[in-house]
Length: 305
Image (cartoon, rainbow, N blue to C red; front, side, top):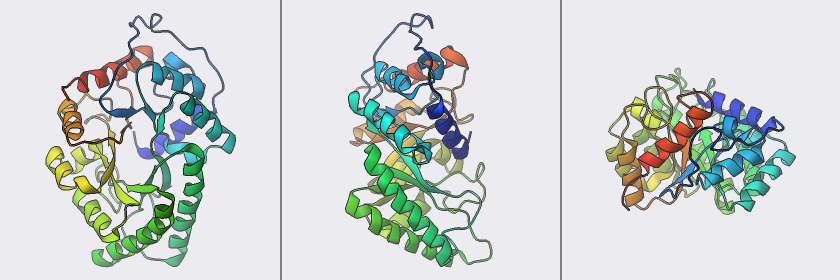
């Protein structure tokens, strides 16, 4: 399940109109509101079999399980009315907004070539994202920097990306917003410019702005490089946001090889107070699969402070 699928699925879930909320008893699962240590953020569609298709009902169901944040990659593509509907429901429950996608290109070397036309399009997307962020009370927005340019030396490509990000940071920083750069693994996305944490750390250091930080997706970094906790520690002062999914499969924690209880405990002990985006699919279908997601997070969050 890749980023493009999440964006499309999120927009489709938000556009659907209505359905009743299924109770925990109907799913043969006892109701329980968890008190999580971290701000885990589901996305629309993750609990639609229990909550129905309406976004307000989905938000209510998330809150009833103890989730205090939400992320929506496709927020920027929603109508203003849909965005305002979502943010009203979130305000009602004091829920925090996670990331939405400000800019992504999986097919073209848009930032690495340094072409002014590509840079202008990127910066226009950043300006548009400022307005969305203000409307929905978002602080973070994801940037995927495009692909590599195989006909240009790596050093020139890196310099071109850094310059574009510096100009984007000058737009975000006065607004108190943060673009988070996401390195994605080269197995699933073999041509993207950013693929490793150290590389993204180097770019953020060069941009040198509080508006340009790392989105550390544990799933992608497990595939790309492993050594998760030491690499988190090395890049800690440039990480602003986490996303998760287990490997293999990119489903909820406990379904793969990553010891998420240790990872969550570690970042909590380091004082992380940001959001942990639940950017993965459900390992099982229907209501049972949705409850499995809730219980997986409860299990991995079960540690002493």
